[in-house]
Length: 152
Image (tube, rainbow, N blue to C red; front, side, top):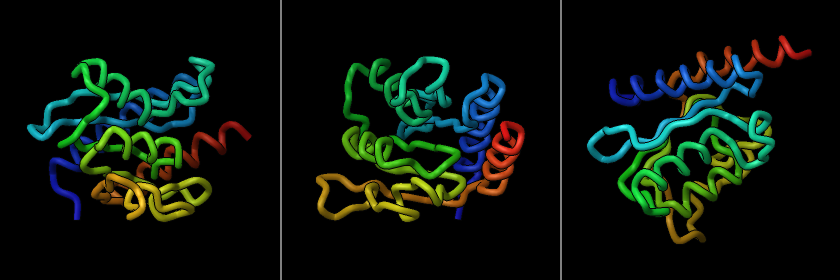
């Protein structure tokens, strides 16, 4: 069950997803907070804007936080993202040692928590994230459906 803190940060991630949509990007937003609930990184999809296939919302937020903290390891952090991370992003979250991942909607085509792959909690890896899914899932799914409907 989502806490009030989880809901507040997910709402911030949804606002970032809206910015992505306004920029013509797939509407996905991500927010990374530390153990004291301070914002340390945030981002939205910038794949098209940056001509960078790795510029997913999660990666943008991780890069910002790592630069801000001067460390690629981000233990005791929580990432809030509006869509279940893909395998690339899940791998980056594991490598960064993010403690917890909270996401909104499942990604039935590329999700790497439980939809397609199970990267975030894979026992073969040297780190596993705590995962909470489905937080404000309908709001995120609605935004994604509207974006893709508009592009067809």
